[in-house]
Amino acid sequence: MIAEWSSLTETQQHRWSAVLRTIADAVPGGATVVVTGTAADVVAERITAALAEAGRGATCYAAPTPGDGGDVVVLLRGGGGPPPPTERADVVVDLRDPAWPVIRRVADRLAGSDHWYLTESRAFFAAKAANWDTKFGDDGPAYAGAVAQAGFRDGGVLVDVGCGTGRALPALRSAAGPTGVVVGLDLTPEMLAEARGRSASEHAALVLGDACRLPFGHASADGVFAAGLLMHLPDADAGLRELARITRPGGRLALFHPTGRAALAARHGRSLRPDEPLAEGPLRAATTRTGWRLDRYDDVDERFLALATRV
Image (cartoon, rainbow, N blue to C red):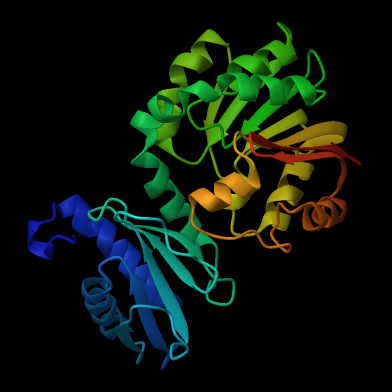
């Protein structure tokens, strides 16, 4: 159930306002917006108010399914049962916590900039940071196996981009050796706070930063590890290009997730598409375009691992 506005805390109202404002800004003037999924009636009313406040001249209504009548489809995910499919949605909003909505997708044709992803990514991960290791703490061996196969240079500078709670830091320290440098970067302060224990024990630095605008010099890293990163970026090519910028020629990139693409897609209620950024063909083409050579591609139920070399 979606709580009445008056029953939300000031912080929760601010979160809802940020989401509604982002949706209103993305909707073209005069468009028809269809809202479907969890508590569609209530959310449609809130979006209608946000559209009016923004002066968009758009209309909004709730529907059981996206149908064919809307210019923009907003899908609300949450509640019990299997998650609804997201293929036809222009905007996907996570409502698993009805008091803390988070936008998980904005279609390229609507997104005028990538600023929405910064706010929404932080909101998504900040709310989950404290319990992240409790929920996913058994992934350590999978991280260690991926790092061991990455071919990182002993004594080199290794950067974990999107480090989260730092689950890869012990393995990266082992790969870098006692003379190497290990750095963990994440967009979310709450995640970095959870990573401090591991960073201290592994003598790794932590940096608050955006993967699309890395605060490192050109060719300053010998290797980059990125777990679950590309799927959270608004532009996969731009992300790969930025990772290439900070990596020296011959340096290594490991793109990893402890769950394979098919299993992850099923968990999120969607079907795999051959044109997705992490599908082998598109990823091979994207790495070639952005300064990498894709050397290995493994996508099985228990993990995803793609290894590339900076050319």
